[in-house]
Amino acid sequence: MHACTRDCYDTCIFDDSHKPIKDFPTLGFTCSRGNMDLKRNDKNRILNAYIEGKEADIKEAVREIARIINGTSKDEILHVDYDGNQGLLTWYFPARLWNALGTVSTDYSICSAEGHNAIKLHYGSSLGALPEDFIKAKAVVFWGSEAAFSFIHGWKLLANKRKVTIDVRLSETAKRSDRVYIIKPSSDAFLALGIIKYLIELGLENPLIDDLQALQGYVRAYDWELIENTTGLKKEEIKELSIFYKEEKPLTIIGFALGRTYNGGHAISLISLIPALIGLRYGFYYSNSQGFNIDFEYLRGYHLSKPSRIVNMGKIWKEVEEGKIKVIFTWNANPYHSLPRWDVIREKVEEGEVKLIVHDPFWSETAKIANIVIPAPTYLEKYDVVYGYWHDYLIYNEPIRDAKGIDEVRLMRMIAEELRLRHPLIEEDEWDAVDRAISKTGISLEELRQKKVVKIKNLNRGYQVAKVLPLPNLTPPPNDDYYLVFSSHPNHTNSQFKELFNTEPIVYNCCFDGTGFLENEKGRVKVIFRKSEGVPKNVLFMFKSSLIDLEGKPINSICNDTSNEYGKTPQLNATIIRKVIIDKN
Image (cartoon, rainbow, N blue to C red; front, top):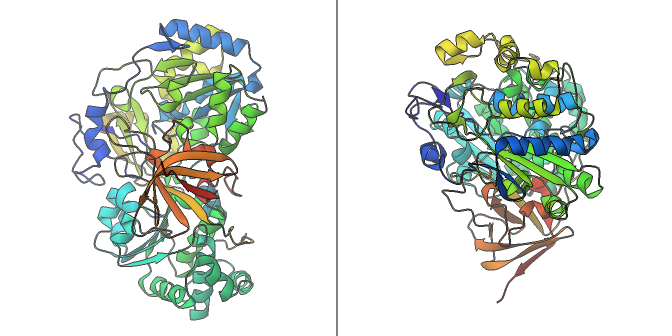
């Protein structure tokens, strides 16, 4: 038994032949990625260690890594890791080495942190609807969520519900919905404000909030003209949507993309209050992982040792540019593709000012520019414990293919041994650490090994009544010519699966065809323009899988790295493009 470990809502569960189990919640089907995983597993693999482009033994590479670490101040060494594989032993436990050394860590802000923190302010937990709640819902609002592509099992459970989509373009989810509201980019907070304002005017029956008076006073400060101008919707349309909420009491699916917009955390904060106003305690879904009582901090070793300092994921490039970071060790991530301004870091690596070390199963864009590369196994080749952020099951992953490379835990221990580092975080057995980390879920490692898939027994449900305060002070987003926005592709999980599926840097838009450039104050990138129905004049849309331009430059080199307020998530989906230049040659 094993589960797909990727950064995906569904976390599909498979049998030993890699067929999706027919039981709930996988229901006997998976996505194109799950179907192609066995084929991809042997393509584009890193099979040996490399030092400065030359093949080397893993032990030799480890000695070189130790030499670099010993020759560098610990507050100049940064580890960059994220959610390429959602296994507890793949992602979290290896951070113990770096925390024991006292090196620099990121703040893990790039994706869902903004929404988690915003929702917790009101509910004490970001845990919302579970799969069983999806089945019970009468209707659904997809708010900034391309669920038809990125959340196929949630979409399946909601198939017969009345669907409304709110987005900045006519997405595939929007095309399959009963009603669509296309709003201006980064105006979601103002739309949520308008809905709350009109719901209060309509009168509330059983609101599950603690201070209606404070909320009433808050919405009075924003007039309808401001809300209409900011969102691009008429008051009558917002009234229509508000009445839908009041009468149908829909489940609201809040997309991660909202946290990467201007006012992103404010938007998620206000959207999460709407279900409580109409009497629904678990009437929203964002991400449930932080409500499962898994002790991620224990796995990373924060109970005994912490990073020397924390760097915002959107600002790593700035730390490098200022000479504050000299060594970057990355695993379980492809930051050259996904984090802002990695063109700056590539230049520093090429100039010899920064050493980049990568541990990866595949030749990612980041691995290709690294000084040292170490081969890693895939999730199909190792034992691990996997959790999701939709369904509340833990899965004991067992390998179904022979391992290539060295896993994260063994590599961590090899580096520690070469450094002669003795520390309780390194010496604790990894399975004992996992057992302790999952103990508050009500599941033991022994039970999980026996049953393979176990439903979490203890959930952090948070407050029964939402706390209204704090409420944000909203300012309208910039009203510029073009917003560059991103969303999921059905054949890719972020940058993964480029070995099998096309990843041309196509910019979908209303008006242009051909090749050309996107330009702003940060620089420009060369892309392919393609006209597409349903993309408004001020929106430029790209899939997240296609973020390397025609000249090999990351699209993130021109992205907005401004941090939002709650989780410090960069405003990638609020990137202003000053010029669109069509190549007439």
